[in-house]
Image 1 (cartoon, rainbow over the protein chains, first blue to last red):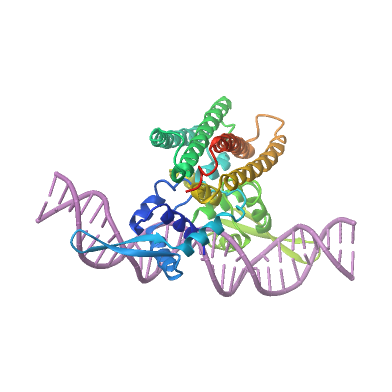
Image 2 (cartoon, chains in turn brown, red, blue, yellow; image 1 turned 60 degrees about the vertical axis):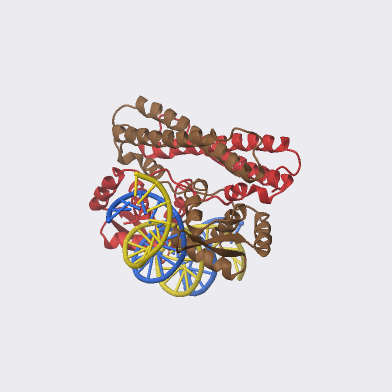
Length: 185
Length: 185
DNA sequence: GCGAGCATGTAAACAGTTACATGATTCC
DNA sequence: GGAATCATGTAACTGTTTACATGCTCGC
């Protein structure tokens, strides 16, 4: 059982769902901390059915299109609850090409470096806007249990982006004070 | 050419280095935004030599131990500079088991959830302390070009951790106000 | 009727992790 | 002499991405 299979188990426990919607879910709400492609999800669902941790009901969409609505089994719920109580691993390290390039800043001129930072700033602003508009949907507090995690994590993602924006602002200011040629080797 | 090979190229350009030290470097200074195992680095070095982007000199350590000191070639420098100017990809998504479990918060009792958050808080404090002591080494500003990226990224990593700590604090307070049973499904 | 999106899957290639394997050096 | 660390590499496995492959449905 890899982590992905527990993620799938947890999402199916939230609601009965098809493989297709599960994939979309991974690339929407869960995207900030987990992701998976279709080509990973379908084989994983198959394995979980074989392990009797989930089961499915075939539902007819329209005239003939068969879709599989998955739900968690009692055994699946047990396995999930047990996994939830395991110790969390160390803080994850993300791989970030932008940061890698900043680390190699001496390869760039002052202008090229500033350009990179400004573009990242724009990316952060765009994502923060999306998160903020999603946040507006949480009007009635306290949020119900099934949405609690989503709500807390959304706040976390926004806090992270705001911090990154503050850092970018500060770094841009710092680099602008450097004389030309003081970034290159 | 995968990203790892550019990372290696950039690090070798900073200083002549052995595969062994390169590995350590990946798991120390670069760890916040890139990582690699020995078993990935050695084959990659071989490929880069074959592509004539790096070359090595055999140095004798002690009596007989041969170590390879790698340095970048002119062609390697060109390839690296070109890559540095490519467009950065979208904001990266890290995979974070802790956050995944928080998303599935309805599986946990209030106490279990708070316990998770408190443990993460401790992890953040520990890492922040390490970063802060590393930060103290930068006494004479402005930093020289080869250290500029390192310096800026260190500040970024600290800002991210501080933001995460703020979020954890806030989340713990929020959850504590919820009545028992208001986290579980 | 057509195009976007719904729906399920497989194959091949690539990236990354864990484990194995060997031997020298340095410091105590 | 022994232990930690320096130093280089390979093998097997797992995880992830990209591309392929097929067909239906819904709204215009």
